Length: 117
Length: 112
Picture (cartoon, each protein chain N blue to C red):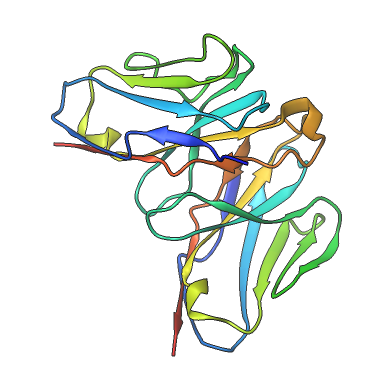
């Protein structure tokens, strides 16, 4: 079974530039998550999708971050404009959703390491 | 609010046993997860506890006490490849779809 795919793996941009990340979840997984992981810290949820709808975006800095999952499969996360403090690894994860029951394990992609100069 | 605490770093010797503790304070509780994350890689699932007690899976075991807001991950017969960060994550009340809240992770170094 193919895992969660993400691209690019690495990205270096200057502050005030824009950047986009792509995620393709495991086939059949209804729920998709974007996390931000700053060096030395645990992942922090940015946004959660259930199919093509947003479930939780309370920690997404909406003045500069946006995300979509138009067809309920793959997703893009965009930052515009980027700030120095956005340097982090952006992890995408997916899970079965309601079909996964209380356990509902999340599977993570390899992440995109963003460096903002 | 939500708060999850775990030690920042630990060092242990190859072949030994190490226990990584995690304490949590959340408004609700619907399960605790442990993930392993090697440097530069994605977190991978290790264990899940929702009831009090010990869950054993090979060399790894995880314990939960809900009344104390406490869990630990026990790694036996340590191997060099166990050098990684170990993330404790709690699911707040709600369904299995409720997002996880992660601790900062414990970086474990296994030395010869």
